[in-house]
Each structure stands twice: as C-alpha cells, then as structure tokens.
Image 1 (cartoon, rainbow, N blue to C red):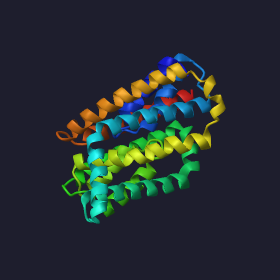
Image 2: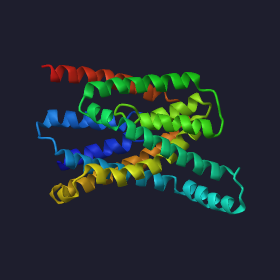
Image 3: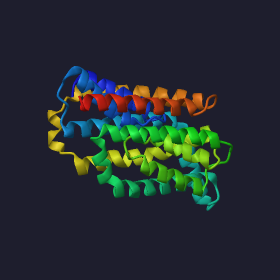
Image 4: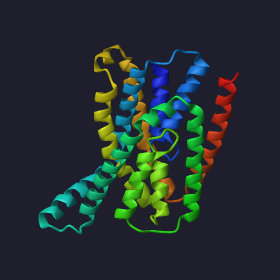
Length: 278
C-alpha cells in the first residue's frame, strides 16, 4: 500500500466512520478512484484487510477518548448499582442495552457475512445502498419529534440497524441514529448511544476478524510505515469529526447528510458505469 493512499484512506475512515455517510462506501470509492487516477496496482487482499483493521482501531481509540468521561461514569455507576442490587439504575440498563446490541449485531453479521463479501467488489451495488441510506436519513428527519431516553425496544432496533450496516453503503451511524429518531429519541441522545454501542462491536471485529481472515505471517511484508501514518490520519480526523459532529447535531438536522448521500451515490454510480463499460 502506498503512503499517500494509506493517509487518504485513513482520513476518509476517520471522517466517514462517524458521519452518517458510510465509511465502507467511501473507502471503496476512494480506493477505486485512487487506482484509476494513479494507474497503480491495488494492494493485496491481506494488506487491505490488515489496514482496514488498523483504521478501525484508530477510530475506536478516537471514540473511547472522546467519550472517556461518559464511559468512566457508566462503568463506575454500573458496579456501584450492581453492588446495591439497584437493577433499575440507568447505568445498569445502559450497559445491558449495549451488551444486547453487541450480541444482536454480531449474530446478524455472521448470518450475512458471505453476502457482504460478494458486494464489496461491486461499487454499483454499494452506490445503490448509499442512496438508500440517504433516503432513510431524509425520512427519519421528517418523522423526528421526540426526546425520549434510550430503552430496550429502541436499543434492539438500533442493534438490528447496526447489524445491517455491515453491508458496504449502509452507514452504521446513519442507520442507528435514524432508527433512534424513528423511535422518538432526539439527535444528540441518539448519536451518543450510537457511538457508545459501536465500541464493543469494533473491538470484537478488530480482535476476531484478523484470526479468521488474516495470514499473520505476511504482516512483515506490508508497508507498515504507510499504515502507521494512515492510523494517525484516521485517529486525528475521527476525533475531530466526533467533536464537531456532536456540536453540529445540536444545531442542524440530518438532511444535509441525506442530500450528500443521494448526490454522492448518483455521481459515483455514473462514474463507475462510464469507466467500467468504456
């Protein structure tokens, strides 16, 4: 993997992992465009898998650092309430919702894993799924009306949405936040829980996926310097993205992201149709 490509891909991962615009779609788009423009040979599948893990770990660190105070309070409150056997405490409920969402997401991911892998190599289908993401964001804003707290039903629906977002083109944050809006939560509360519920699933994917898909003996052959720079780009951009996205949600709606997804999907679909059928 070239250094410039790693930095660009890392920055795109950091930006699009938390914005509701689908990180998987944008990474596929950026890699395809980079190879078309530079006429370079794409990295090996093993190197792409390894860098994907590195980039996701960077965004995991970003969300943990940003929400460190929240996580500390939740974990501390969980054990205090557990000791008092206060099972109605919000922190105990929150940990339970996150655990349940992780379980549901993992099961869905395992069930659709093969179908997801078949889509990754087809940018046109990814464009269609990104377009659907834009429509979901738009309709969720039209239905937006509530200010409720996270509850069991909402956490289950958000977990299902997070599981379906394994498909490249579906935005994890977009689908989960939209689902919460449909269930009556406000944007900030929905985004906060969406980011918190992403922590265990990204952690599990980063720990388990390499053992299944990666030949660890090949790591020494990868461009590790490029990957380190890509990691830094993903971390810095990811942290800044969370910080300003949360501020943005307090003032603006998701419509701007829905319009972006709709336009990006149509433009990229047209470009790929022209290029691959030229």
